[in-house]
Length: 236
Image (cartoon, rainbow, N blue to C red; front, side, top):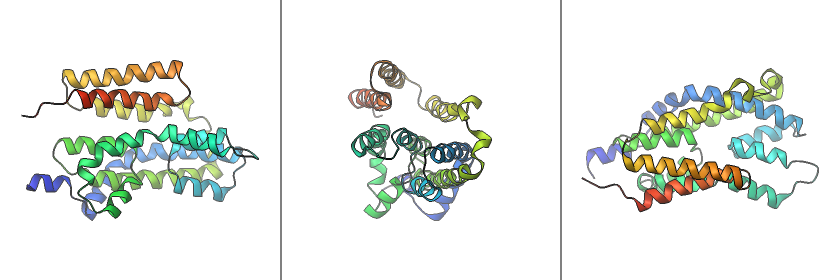
């Protein structure tokens, strides 16, 4: 293994700390969304301990909000499980894209890293891997930063949720979308990438209009992933 390749697979305390600091700015917005979730969960009848435990163990904002819509005196377990799986199915593709680098880690570390992978940490790490740099610290350290921010925000929502009860009215729901768009724009610029992103965007939009709720996330990811797998990038 070359020194450059070894750097890309590095996972040490220094790399994790750097990744943690790089994701801190984004974690501030995660705190606000966690605050909104804490308030919504309280209004749905969950007690404080259950809310914090859910955010700690599940750590999936979109699916946790979706779960609240099904919460009640009698929780429909099968529809709840299907909904959560559908919202988070994109992690299957994220894990597949990270496998070339994660496979060099021992299984315990590999799955430990994946426990805290988020959209933001995945996007930044893929950019780093593409440059031949280490993205492991971004995956683990950045993921830990966002995980702690989500827990903190959920806890704050129990006590101060009324301060920001509607983050959408402030445009905060666009923060992650704008971040992912910035990651896409800063990536390789060629016909292949343009076609992949166009296919993903168009299929996701069609699914949003005509398919069940939350299915557009999976459809868009699959469309872009399949096209990328079929139209392979030429190696120099």
